Image 1 (cartoon, chains in turn purple, blue):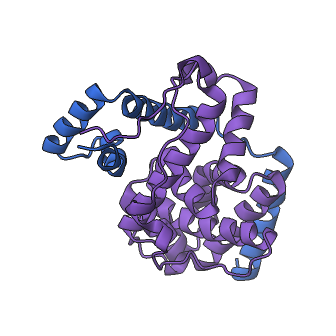
Image 2 (cartoon, chains in turn purple, brown; image 1 turned 30 degrees about the vertical axis):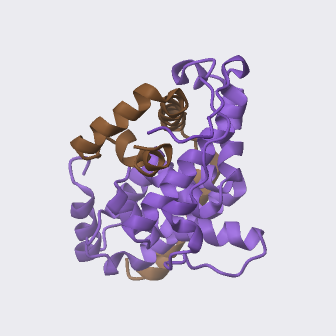
Image 3 (spheres, rainbow over the protein chains, first blue to last red; image 1 turned 180 degrees about the horizontal axis):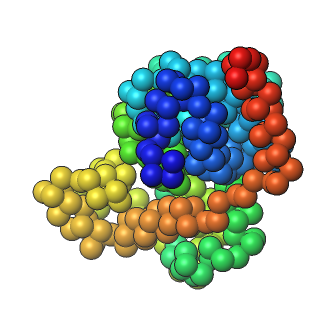
Length: 210
Length: 81
């Protein structure tokens, strides 16, 4: 079974009702789902809810999975919906759709310009070891709008392609790209305000460089 | 290339998917515009920092709890087995 790929296991589940195959699929993906859910919701108990709902839903719908996307992308699609639902419920919103429609803010023309521009005092390799940096990253993530947050987590942290991220979030690829750019720029802005060297703060001149 | 145009191409440049001709323009702009150069560095560092961070570990009690929940659901779904 360790040699079987995910689709082999899905087929084994479907044809033989193999609980072992299902358990192996859960084992392979549960840690990453939990970790994304934890980062995305910013809460341990919400992350547990998202993770459990995700795999209950996987069990319920696995027969219907035809391998249009990879199994992992499909699982992340379920997990993303579950995470958004919880985040929006907490915010008192009832909408659960990932809003396919392009919003006005999703155009490139309205991308905010970088404001706080400075070299960082330390390299990421040094920073990543520090506990307070982890907290800083989590806080920066929770300040992102959830629809930008998920795009960033799937694309830049999980390493999904633009196309896979679009599938997982029911978005167009163009929409994924704009949201990713917004997420990256806002995180950069946030982190640089803390990690940037104020002595090396650069002021962007008002004329446009050609 | 202007700063705005650079901003619009930032993802493609950082991800290495930018068209080679645009890449030359991009780098030419950066060579003469220190703020843009630093923004690109910052963006790369931001991504690295998140990517290389330790994933969160699942609490052991939760792992057991979920395992039991899934077993129960399995038995409901496949009562014969």
